[in-house]
Length: 415
Image: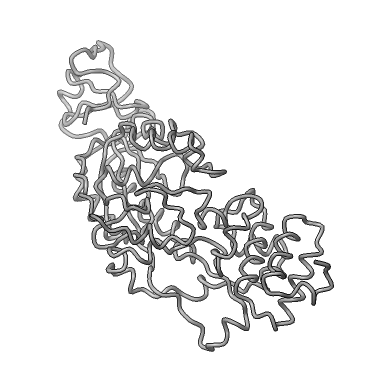
């Protein structure tokens, strides 16, 4: 990895004047420069046996070399299941793939890293003087959804299902673990920036290059021993660190994820058509295409099907962790009866198109149409009210749900 310098060691001039910053014998690096500046011939560096505690501008210079093993020990101790390092060179393959898939329309209305592929694949733009990406993987439960004590409770409450990663704020846990890694670097005087669940970086591409795992055919990153039940994030730093080795592909000829996708959204190994992906359709703005509504089943946020059938994910320790019912099941009738403020308070950590809770209601209406008990008068009343709403989107979805439950004629609505 080339050292990101503002001055090359062979051409850096030596100022005869006493500088306002301190340098030290181990590196001869200016602590206060916005990007790393090296002065190997600096007189102060030559005579300084110990690093200066602080420079004139109040910065603490790097005082020790930080090893990848040291950072890995900190990260794993904080709960990460994998940590690797890569350089900050552009993620060229990811950039090409984003542009190509965007040109083909495979992203649909999805933006995220598709919005600006050149920016989201340029790690150097994240931190001035960036030299390394320290990438971590945080695990979350990938086992069965916990069932309510009353076996009939599911029918009585008409619950909607939430994808495992969204049952609680696992990203907060990831950021906390990455903050521990960042603190280790900062104690040595390096600068850092944490990037997680952020459109500024294609996290899977960074993790792949950092040796965290390999790309599955469902486009998820598979971590050896843990499968895809992980969230990914990075610490961008100006510390120059040894890079990790890539991980070999572990999928072979397996295509279970491709075959299991309920809408055929995995159109080629590693290529997902967002226009067909249930996980995106419940987040997208506007109406859910009618052709995919039945396939949604009871889902109101996310879809785990392609992960549930994946052998490495099924064999992982995360697959043995039962998902708490409190986070994985949502009372659909209660959701529809809640106002905007209540919905955002409960589910505000989710991605909700334009922060408009109508999209949560839309999802709940479709789920009711798929799994509700038609004999439940509360279901008929709730859907009937939505069908008469002035909101065109909700009314149309409610009429669809009533038809699916064969209830529209009993709701005072003309066919």
